[in-house]
Image 1 (cartoon, rainbow, N blue to C red):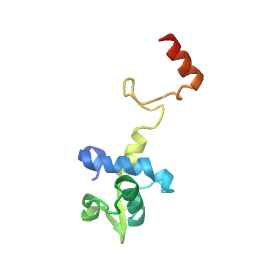
Image 2 (tube, rainbow, N blue to C red):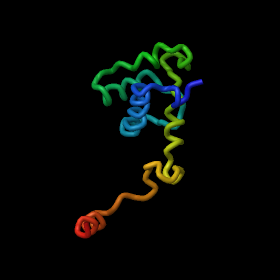
Image 3 (tube, one colour):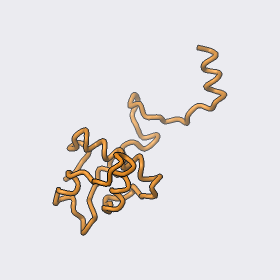
Image 4 (cartoon, helix red, strand yellow):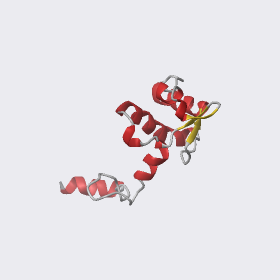
Length: 110
């Protein structure tokens, strides 16, 4: 079974790149499978090359069909960082960013 805990740092970096770049590319991340075309778009944006990492393309257990790859770690990562669902001290923002006025006020008082 594929889980975030089993990924290396480089693999996790690619998963994070998918999560970060997919929305701007029009790729839905609320799924387990991604097409070769979708992953190539992410790779071009992330690394400037169309190559999809071998840990995805060469792992038979990640094949969901012709040109379709199983990456359940995407949804697992997204669900684990939902706003308001973290733990105290996890460094996840549970509030909206400060307005310009609040930032200015904060700078003046410091």
